[in-house]
Length: 424
Image (tube, rainbow, N blue to C red; front, top):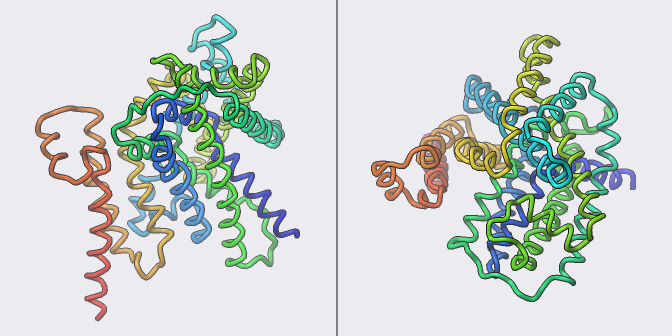
């Protein structure tokens, strides 16, 4: 009984870690555009926003270390650079996005103030909370997540029974791929590596808890978190489908979520959700800033000065990027995600697979091939040349921004085949 309780407590903790309020704005728009093909979109979104992140937790269950351990089989230098890039992306994109979501959902509908003012006050408070490591955030986290889940479930269930009959046709040509790539924007796979390790280390294990027992606890907690994410994401996508005819053609992600909450729960429900989302965004931002500052403090002889400098840089970046609207931040995030997400997915999968198939050589070859074939996807969002188009036309699935998938699988099979030959 005690063990089951512990599994559920850690499962809910993991869920709240992934449950960044910014993610809430992604599924309803997907549903609006998916129309009658919403199941395919949901499956695609599930792969990158739920399944891969849960594999990340399984990898942590096996490694029981830090983010550095994910890439150490490639090389020490690679893992250090990978960690640096991951934290830099977290400071530059998902952290500022929380301020932008807060402005569009909780400030702009009620106050006539600039987004720059919002992001400045917002990250000023984030800095204060990060430096003081206030326990208020822990209290907020305990009550915030259940409240937001309750409101979202209310929106989902009320929406299912009160939605208009008209549903717009799908605007997606490849719904599964569109869902897959939108799942990148949740940053959940990155979160599974960045914050997952912190959570795994901080789990309250007894001193006599064995490695296998820890592994079982982390794995089951991950499954609970994954199931929770799937219910919320699928429900919001489906509501986006059901209410698609009520949204404006150019409605933004935050406008659609606000409209959903208003149409299902009325004005009070909409205001309540806005406030809770703003608070949840704030806890996410503090978590990112503190986690990143902790990492750089750790690799610099636990220097508090480095911690403060990193927190200042993170908050200044937050103010600079957070003043832009959510749609703009999502658009500028795409090239970075096309660059880092394939490598992150491959590192997660390699760390989950049995060790006999994932030697140091296999790690190096597969990661190198993945990096090489993800370059056209990355460049495709920065430059548009005839030469690049020709290259993408020769690589399977490259025009769907998944050109790295087949080469990664083939390199994994070939590297294992060659290794087996050498052993024989």
